[in-house]
Length: 190
Image (tube, rainbow, N blue to C red):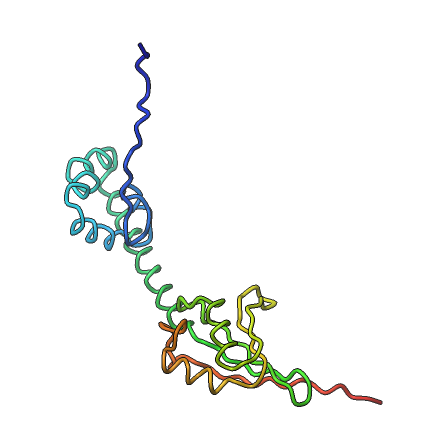
């Protein structure tokens, strides 16, 4: 016979759909109230286990009322800060289409920001290459971000494809496109 020891059965873990943490750790995440309301609607038994009166009383039993109020105020402040940060990130989201001159009559079109909207860059590059019959690839910028580089001046056609939501470009908004022209600096000869 085997000796009694720790259980080897797996423990089922219930993950929060709001903060993606296990439900026991939602209180340490950025959006406690959203997590609580989601869990209450999703699974009442798990909600009672984590946020029920008995579990809260056992966890907070040693805290004074002042400390408890301070913790709740800090949590609310952190939640507001996270919401403001998310709004600022949403405002930053834009697609930049830059036309760069390679030689005198040759151009390249660089597209930044498609990955923010959930577009698969490799599939989009392949779609651009087949649509325009040119070379298109995914490369890294000096800042470390990914971009699509297309041979030729096809910026207007790319904007039109974004408006039509063609193929791999579904989900990328055409109203958040910024066009930039970059000319190669001439080197002065003496």
